[in-house]
Image 1: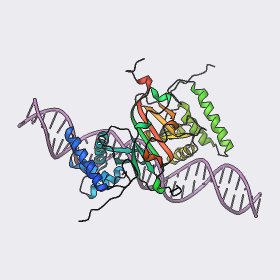
Image 2 (image 1 turned 120 degrees about the vertical axis):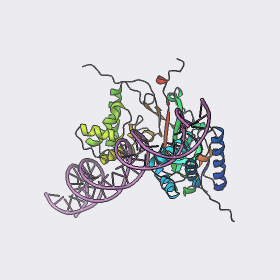
Image 3 (image 1 turned 90 degrees about the vertical axis):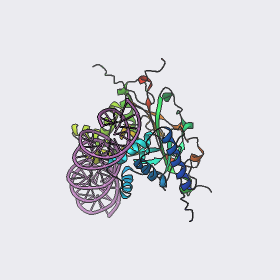
Image 4 (image 1 turned 180 degrees about the vertical axis):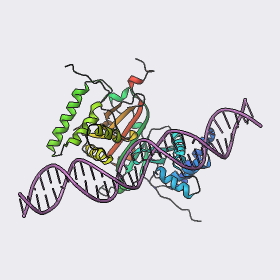
Length: 166
Length: 166
DNA sequence: TTATGTTATGTTATATAATAACATGTTGGA
DNA sequence: TCCAACATGTTATTATATAACATAACATAA
């Protein structure tokens, strides 16, 4: 059997990689984390995470529901939203507000404020670590207790930027 | 007649100020800008901006619609969304994705990537300038052409942070 | 002035996203 | 075994946003 290589732009860069190994890696991480923290990794939760990590692209709740339906699961809206709440709360998945969609975390297990760069041409999304950009260099924010941050940067990725000098 | 002082946390800090002067200031700026750029500052557009700058708090489209209705304007959803599109496009108003709401810009006329700090206790929102935090210090983002950014920071503002040392 | 293109406003209907409220199932101890 | 906590399931509804189309206002060229 030939090894199928799913090439996608994900993770900490827009670089290519073998996405199957990547999937496995994050699924393993998740199983380990749930085990250690006595969280129930139920079939439904596992399935939703699997759906999200498959292509590692942002998916809306209703897209996820459609896939769940096709694959024999219940598919009323609260099913997806509840599982997504769980996955987001535990840090396995992030919500991308600007797209009303959800994406598997690229740095699971590693403390971070998630940030995303979104190419508006190819629609690929990459998660980047944002520690270096925080706290924002502003007097205002100095005394502000940051708990969560939503950083979504829209633009053109290198691959789509035809005008760039190669 | 007594001068009514509306005290609110807005602008580049969570500091107090006379919000009436502030309103006037931004309305003037807007008029000037529209004049110079031959943009039509119609009664509807003026009204929506006025609604947003009144208390300088984020308002949802349907909240704005309700106010428009009370004040004698048409109030079907596209009315608000279209005017908001205009105001956002011209930079007079920003959309806060995390709250599905809109807020008058605090740095109108000044080139900037907007960023917000949102206190989840008192719900006040402050806009801060974000130049200093961009581009994010990450190899990934180096080659990425940033066009737009959405930065929303959730936490506790100094006034609400009871635990802080005074 | 009239014709014409453009922009703004208006209406109805509908799409899309998210949650409330409540019922049933499952599981893991006291 | 019983109970408590959690997970899944259903129906209905709320909230957010847009499509599609109609009319009005306004500038400007014939």
